[in-house]
Structure formats: C-alpha cells, structure tokens
Length: 182
Image (cartoon, rainbow, N blue to C red; front, side, top):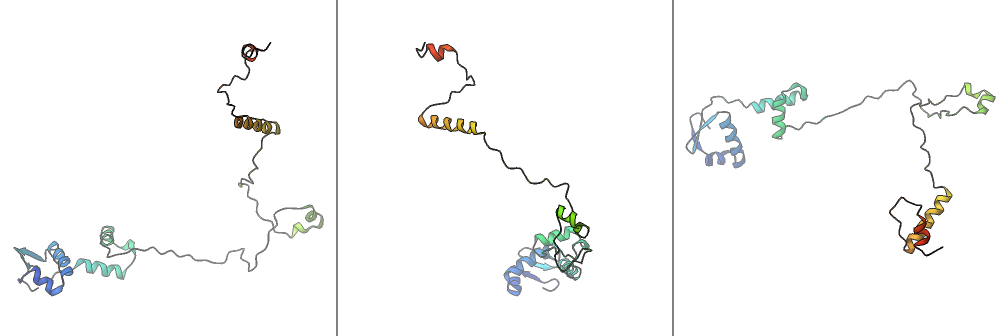
C-alpha cells in the first residue's frame, strides 16, 4: 500500500491473503500506520517500524529472560510468539572420598575385632544419632482376653445382644427374683 492510497479490505486480502490481512489491518490501525475512511483504508505513516519484529530479534540475539522487560515478555508469551524454557545443568566432579571400587564399611565393633586388633585398620560407617530406629512390632491380646472375645463372638452369632450399659453388676431382684430363683 502506497502513501495516500485508499484500499478496501477485499483488495488487501487479495494482495496478502485473508488471514494475514485481518491481522495486519488490526495491528496497523492500532499502531496508527493507517486510518479507516468509510470502508477503505489509507496509509498515513511514512516509515512504519514494527516494534514486535525488533523486540523478537532482540530476544533471538540475547535469549536470557532477565535481560528483557517483563511486560513485553508476558505479552509475547500470551500471544504464543515466545516459548520460555528453563534449562538446568549440573557439574559433577570427583570428591575427596572418590574410589573406583565400592568399599564395604563396618557397622559394628565386634569382640573378634577387639581380640585380633582389626578395628585399628577398619573403616566404620558414621552413626546417625538422629535416626528414629526400627519401629517396634505391634502388640497382641492377652490369652484370656482373646478367649473372652471368642466367647463374645459365639454368643453374638447365636443371636444374643449386648446390653447398652456399663452396669455389669445387677441387683438380686434381676438376678433371682425376676427369674423366680430362690
């Protein structure tokens, strides 16, 4: 489009393509490179400079995210012009205890080691005083309580019900008189 030339949207779509014309017209209007006069567009900028193109070229030259404006970065991410990836790298070097073969460390000082003097040349594993240790095994019911639980289950299976009370001792009336026992 030449300076001062008035073109309708159909002509511009024929020149550059339908999709590109819609995007380009919107951007050109926003940047005030063109103005709308009825159903025609007229170029008003002498030498338009595309800031997006220059910014994206800057990103290509210096890919570090910290070197650029956060607002511009977020705008390009939102429009999917820019995809930020984080790369992590590690440097591995030999430490002071490096060895080509794995050496088994001693964990206990035994009476045989003391007797023979091998403990002087042995390398011991460091003791962790903050370790919780092995968890103890779970308990079990006392044999009499286990038998009582078996009897309870048998009676419940036979149809008996448990009384919803904590009174295990009843008066003589309920034990004898109500049952007609002397």
